[in-house]
Length: 398
Image (cartoon, rainbow, N blue to C red; front, top):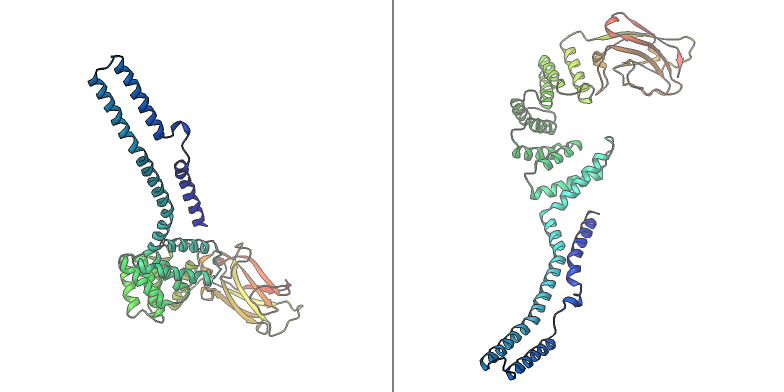
């Protein structure tokens, strides 16, 4: 489509130039024929003869004027065909140039690889317009192929190197991601975020190990920017793995300050902090829940019971903050909900003030509520005000 538009524009521009050149000149400005010039010369010569006969001109004057007329005739006649040939040649040279110009421009465009840039931009725009949950494998592969080919001639293109590295990370190809990040670091060696992403790729490539490559790269990133969110997140993981839970908490709290609290990254960091605090033996915000079921309801002992806390008046279907899973045969039962029971990537119980406790007996066994399930709930509870056991009775059907 783009080339069609460009071609139309070139043709339109060429038309404005070609039309005046090809248009036949009007009669008023046409060249004077040779025969007309000769007739005029003879007429002027007759006039000079008459003037000589009448005595108006001397022999010397007559000879000079005749010679002048002959000179004018000789000068004028050879120039006319030469001017026409020169004009025709110029017109055709211009026309040839106009016709060759788009072809030469297209060839140069292809030679320099700019057509790949256009395709890459179009693919990126298409990907950006898709839903985040869309995993267009063909589109992703086309992007990787085009960018890889472009990087053969533009080895230092940082933008393309980063896109390629992140695409490989999405695919779990940490080996290729590490190569792309390494090339990017060679171009820009003092970028803390770039180094942190590179350290992350090497960490996954080496089987979740910091020894060697990942640890060295991470240290370089932290030296450049101690508050970098990605670097501090990795530093927290390294400290946790080494058993330094207090340092893990410090690192993850530093990372938390750099991002919005409602993002999945923030929720993952909060979950990590809760686990580190648990390892240190710190008291976590918690709610003790006693779950019973109404004797009027007929149930099977094998049915699954989910007991969870969710944010009060959150989204229409807020994700549970903490979840415990039981069987109907276990009821009545008492469970303690805290941050260690958070959903992966979800918010923590300690991150909210008011919750609702729900106990749901699932007919299908699924964690997703469905028609026919049995449920009980408490309404709004402030966590700080409930050090005692909260009672929930399963007594209604969805």
